[in-house]
Amino acid sequence: MLREFDADTEATEANCLPEAEARRSSQGAEPGSESGFPTQGATQPAPVESDNGFGAVFQNRNFLILWAGQLFSQLADKVYLVLMIAIIAARFETPGQTISGWVAAVMIAFTVPAVLFGALAGVFVDRWRKRPVLVWSNLLRGGLVIALPLGIWLTTGWGAVLGLPVAFWLLLLITFLISTLTQFFAPAEQSMIPLIVAEGDLLSANSLYTTTMMASVIVGFAVGEPLLALADRLMLALGITNNGPAILVGLSYLMAGLCLMTMAPGTENLSAAHEDLSQFWADIKDGLRYLGQQVQVRVAIIQLVLLSSVFAALAVLAVRLAEMIPAIKASQFGFLLAAGGLGLGLGAVLVGNFGPRFPRRFLSLWGALGMGVCLIALAWTTQQLWASMAIIAILGLCGAFVGIPMQTLIQEKTPEAMRGKVFGLQNNMVNIALSLPLALASVVEARLGLANVFVGMGALVGLGGVVTWYIADTALRKTQAPS
Image (cartoon, rainbow, N blue to C red; front, side, top):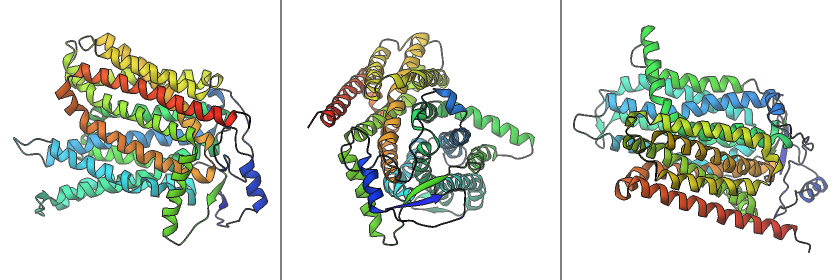
């Protein structure tokens, strides 16, 4: 059941859709839909076909506001992890002690909410207006980060609990809360794009959205330390000591929230609210059932999970690669990651302008095969700076050919009232997938060697691309075959 809600008013009226209208919505599913789920919101007018590349997207005020909010929020997300490492090194690590144990605890606190609340948050997002979710999730995260230094200062002399300082437990709690709020922000943001962008412009819009998301994984870790150092110097000039980095991250979240306040998304179709808590589990199962029936959407999510894992592993392995290249130091691994970000940006331009001419599944296949070839080629350039940078740039370009079409396909095939559930499940899987390479990449590299790791990753990515393409292509041909 859907509710129609105008996001620009204070009304909270819930209107049940007539059964005939619901049936018309179901019958109007796009070709290739494997189930009776509608692929558009029941009361939404048909989106205007545009296919004007980036021109129409850059003229869309609401999307530009959403994109600006994403830039600030994604930057804060990634720099926050760098901030945690800096705080641990300054306040908790003792001489002769490894920092890895402290960092592992923070990573666990950041990952657990994705596992526990990722799917559940999507259920709530389907019930709530998207703009307030986007705004408040950023404002609350900003406030938590800015308050963190004060909290650590107040609890520094409180002793230890279970062998860890109380101040560190506070840091873990703040990290847990920030990650929990992120689980609400992500599906709300992804669900908002089809509400404010015409269907013909979705590929171009997702070119910017997905590239920003993927580039933040690569570039965020690279620029995090310099940005925090700059913030520290600026705060020192203002007479504020030690708190500059936290203020920078917190302000980035706050800026995202303030930007998103100015959006005007219009009417939304919301899932009916239920007071019975058992209904939440039923809604999660409804999302899983939808993915089970929609082969193309399921395959697209698998490809996005694989893509996120590759870039997360690359963020870790780039440090070792920089250490092996004679021309640079290990601390300069950011040059390698920046090349990947440049490739992603170029790929976004190509996909946004020329992608609508090609089927989504073939774009992702070409991208996966290209990524596999690039990863294998890196095994032979571990001593060469420019060759490695060029290959990583092409790797990023190929990644755009996978991520952007697949994110667009999910939005096109998923009905409005199901998007929160589907995107919640997607973010759940992506966040889990991100944590594994971050934790295991360096360990596997130490055992097998960097070149062997690159070859193995390349083979897995290429094989995964072919298998997922075959599954999606077979399912699509079955739905298009005459009965």
